[in-house]
Length: 165
Image 1 (cartoon, rainbow, N blue to C red):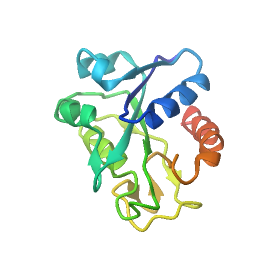
Image 2: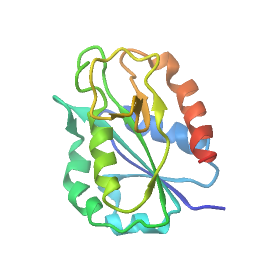
Image 3: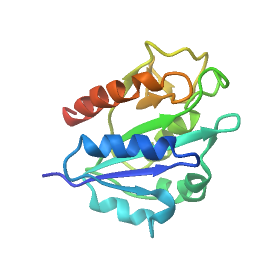
């Protein structure tokens, strides 16, 4: 079985809660806050790395991730798969919705990893996002403020998508 690590940054608990639901759907997955990781080098022990972050302010990366993002860029994750999830508020911040997920994606793109888990933009009401590439989110976008009723369904569908990647 592939080793799976779910690493998140969460300030209010929404991203942490999403990480727990993802973990419940992925047998044997380990979940941890990026602030509790002794070194980003620890990510190398996983075959599938799932990175999650909330977006703050006007499209900023969550604080704990902000401290580690440059270290992530320096890793060589050749042969690893990396997927992404992000939380945000598309009603209050429609032009920066889940931007942090796009920032994580850009950093991971420098690691030689295989980036997986793109998710449709259908059903979201935002105007712009750094996490949209080629008409899809780079990973799973979640909005606990405005679409909490869709979170579990989206997570379940996305987990199946990355399992088959």
